[in-house]
Length: 175
Image (cartoon, rainbow, N blue to C red):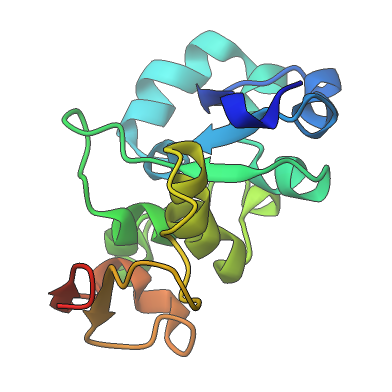
């Protein structure tokens, strides 16, 4: 495959298990919309009953993709969902949205498919830059553009509140 083409497949709600390692083998990025990977009413009322138990248990296999060596990139699916990547990163890490985690009433959806916080943030930063293709963005490194946000908390120290984090300032090209 030609890496300059930067092929990717989006949504990835249901992947045949034999296809998971093919992402890495073929150089195809896995483009996640992580916000959907939680056990909300949409999932319990409109999805699981129609998929059946076996297929429902294979949804959004983020951790399987990561373990297989797939390149993870991520997006929001806006305007049908929030454009806030912090809410989606929260779901990627916890498999439950922040409100459900804070209330304690929502169970994580397939928690074995949760991503480590580093992988979730990388998918939404360097991964998204890679697929766009913006090799000069998405990381903090010499020569990279200084596009970044400052949050009101360190999500790596407070992972249970990733989805509640607020942007304090936005920097574009260092300003």
